[in-house]
Image 1: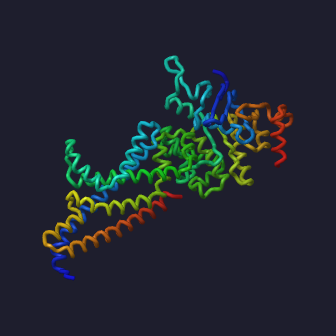
Image 2: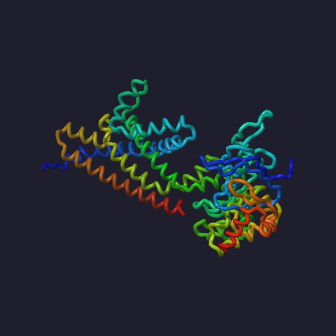
Image 3: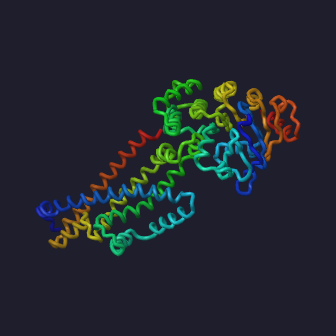
Length: 258
Length: 221
């Protein structure tokens, strides 16, 4: 056992002719909070999507807690992973999407108990009790019986966070969690993410454009461009002392836009 | 015009009411089978394996491109050659169901494609099985928008049932033709047949509206 939660080894991913990830090497230790940033089209979201098995990779190996994600050992041989293996690895990972992706025909509570009830075999009451705790944690206990359309964007995203926590993931992926929100709702979502990061219970991989937040919450920031990690370091070094020209350009553009 | 009320009430109506039952049964049975069949065809058409999706696509095209009457005749006269002898009504229901399955499959496809991709991705991220994903997430969201279209098929199937008179099923059209031939009086029988179809159509349309309203208030949010 290494103390890595996630390891990418020479991972390649392409859509048709377009290379998105090219020989990406990347590792995250258990309990680490890592922010991935980069220009649009740099492959930062793809890193999360291949981890969540929403996309297949063409080459390389991804290890989740030392177990290969897309392969498995069978009688000592490394073969393509079967469904059960993928589901097992996937159960360690939770993902929060840019557009929340809540189920619109279910209440906030219904959204939270759907997966635990049928994949973990909990009774409706057990699942609801646990879900209510997590909804309370994100400050939405009083909204449990509201439908997503009755909630603000910030509230919807907090429900989505509670929903993914209900599956007890050890690794949390946040894909631009505040990008679809009105500015005044960004804070409430970031606060929840900060609490999760501070709790130290989760390994967190965050894709965001909130530079200030990334600086404050991350143990490490990876700057990715052209499907490769161009520079990675502790946040203060990345933001105050960028070494590569590419990162310097990126930061100056981002700061200019402010 | 020579219209006889006694003939209408004593001869035509009793037999037509009985025939209306056959028409109603043929409609409901065909529609239910078509709903299930359409869903199955759609799922097969979307199947990952080309060996399944390709033949299904061809089958749907074949069904859509040939007239229903030909298919009814085909089943009625050819199935016995393969050792399958079914009553005319069953054969007819089967033919109408298959024909409309192919049409419903397209409606289902449109409904499923209207569900945002993010919903599927959320299900993957939450490790929800494919079966549950369809049952709890995708179908409840794709059904309400397509209910009006499915309702149209219900009325369409109803209006296709007179084709069954070609294989001697005792539905409304067949009985009105029989009465006409027996008594050599077509006026009352054909008129009553028309009125029956009209009334039953209106009832069907009303029922569909009720279902639409129910779904709108219960499922859609």
